[in-house]
Image 1 (cartoon, rainbow, N blue to C red):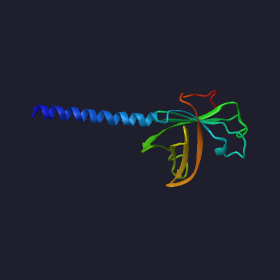
Image 2 (image 1 turned 135 degrees about the vertical axis):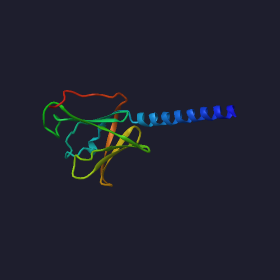
Image 3 (image 1 turned 120 degrees about the vertical axis):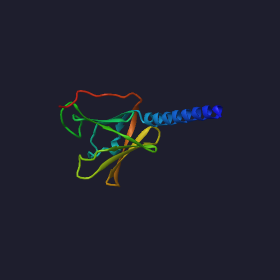
Length: 145
């Protein structure tokens, strides 16, 4: 009886460790730096330099204000979000920032690219393709005030 109990406990511990390893692998699956594709830029064909970095569950957006699209200062506007895992996707909610509930759904697209779909109150209203830049989690500067 003691052997059965010992084996059961050991199997339970191993099973729990596998779940944690699977969750960690899912979180790290997206890690890296991605750049907004020109096709997804909503700027009448002008260059709109934007990056997304993903480090675990932290998603950071970097938007260069000095590009042709923004025509602003030589700096990066940045904001960070915490994602949740939803199957093979990341969900990033921005509730409270807009009059409706916005959720960005991040999935793999093609080889190493990302597809970011925008879900407003349960309706997908558009998407963007972000090309793979690097496995490094890059930062950009200077940061706009």
